Length: 112
Image 1 (cartoon, rainbow, N blue to C red):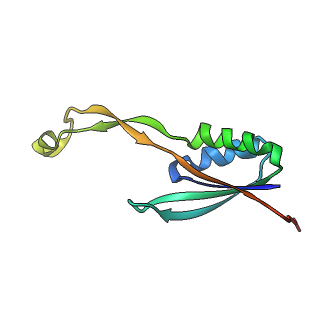
Image 2: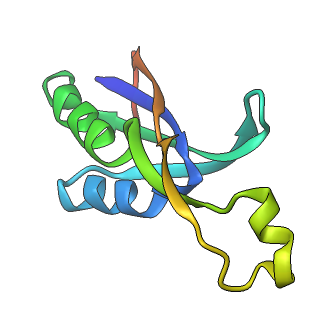
């Protein structure tokens, strides 16, 4: 038996937990804060059989893994002009997502 403990971005919480549930895994989620920028994270705990760990990791990677998003950017000089409404913008690639995952051995498990 294994316990998969994953710390993911709060933004990825709903879609990741839904995907885990649809695959038959029960996930417990905990709100957490940490890291350099003190961003809000979600910690997900999944208990599973040893042979199911790769499936859990695949789901975490697919729905909460690192990716590049396109974010709108308005130059500061344009934002100040005429209240910034309708200011032209460009999209810039931004790193998003990412998970820190621990897989731990479980010596005993009970569900009451």
